[in-house]
Image 1 (spheres, rainbow, N blue to C red):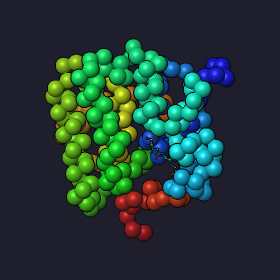
Image 2: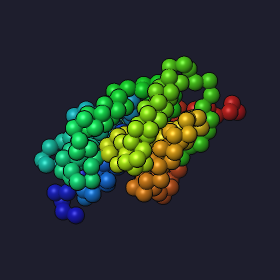
Image 3: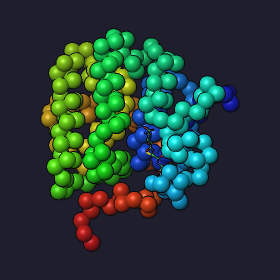
Image 4: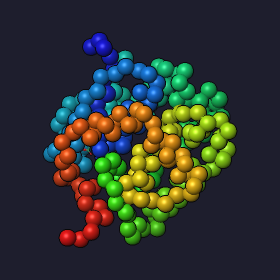
Amino acid sequence: MTETAPQLFIGNRNYSSWSLRPWLCLRWAGIAFRERSIELDQPGYGAEGIAEILAISPSARVPVLLADGVTIHDSVAISEWAAEVAPAPGLLPPNRALRAEMRSVVAEMHAGFPHLRRDLPMNLRRRCTARDLPPETLRDIARIDTMWRTARSRFGAAGPFMFGRRSMADAFYLPVATRFRTYGARLSPESEAYAATLLADTDFHAWEAAIAAEPHRLFSRAPIDSLYADPA
Ligand SMILES: N[C@@H](CCC(=O)N[C@@H](CS)C(=O)NCC(=O)O)C(=O)O
């Protein structure tokens, strides 16, 4: 790979769902890129104050892609860049109406589901059962279940992904499938089948394998690893 290869800066693979999404899009698009990992568990976390991130990201957040001589500092922008550079794999469906529907669910994920993100943060290593979830979080889960079930009933004949063929929507909801696995959320059979399709992705397995190779350290700046633990 040359020094001009795109560089993707990501956060901890175990926790950073915003990093995983464009990373999957770049892999699915077949784009060669250099990867740089930044530890999120350090001073400034949660306050957009991590010095290493500030040095490369105008938003003080990761993911960031350095490519084409510019800084692309958002998961959707990076994923859209990947889809433009390599249109053939179909990250953006060629049909305009389908593309608009796909962008709607990507935007819904990117801008929404705050309660799901608060109560079921991505934690790939963890397995536990979420307890006493508030109604607003149950509503987020129910909305996603309906989204997945409806899409699968409409596009099932075209393939096993949300819109039949694999697209950017699948990269945006794969981290959600991991949250449902981590916290034991119950879904409709159609959504369970779709989540299993996402979790079987070979690029995602490569991402998970890299976590298994890292030293196991619990996150100290937010209670992600102790959520729903039995009281000592
Ligand atoms: N809207 C951004 C969100 C990115 C984001 O929140 N990144 C987190 C890590 S997953 C971050 O960099 N946090 C640094 C901090 O909180 O200081 C995107 O879609 O890329």
